[in-house]
Image (cartoon, rainbow, N blue to C red; front, side):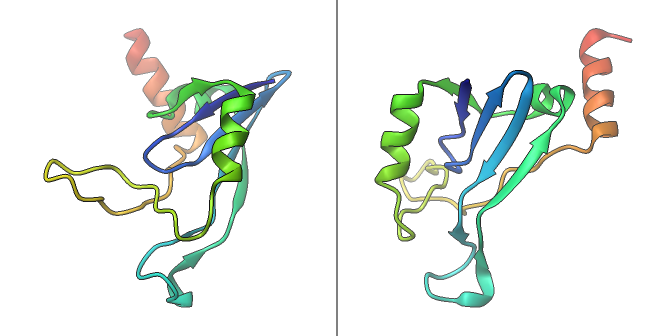
Amino acid sequence: MNYWINSNSGDYITEDNGKYVLHLLPRWAGDYGDYDNYQGAEYIELTPIQFESIKGFIPIKQKKLYSRLNKFNERKRYAPTLTDGSKGKAIRTEVPSIQDAREIRLKELGI
């Protein structure tokens, strides 16, 4: 099994025998405690083409991934660090549609 993590969002991808699953962590989109802006955990199956098109994920070992997730609590804010040193806005990973992913791959191949 292989793993990739996005350090800006905390979301991660697992791969088992060619089957890719994107794990979106629960998070607060707005202020902490504002239940209208709470986004629960989601699991999305990806095609290999969608996996190749997603940007920002780096390989990680299973031991490192689960040690990071065990420290996760709802107050931890995964977000990019801005140039002034403050945390940016926490956003979910966007998954390209199968058609968009196909177009990206064809453009990369120069077809």
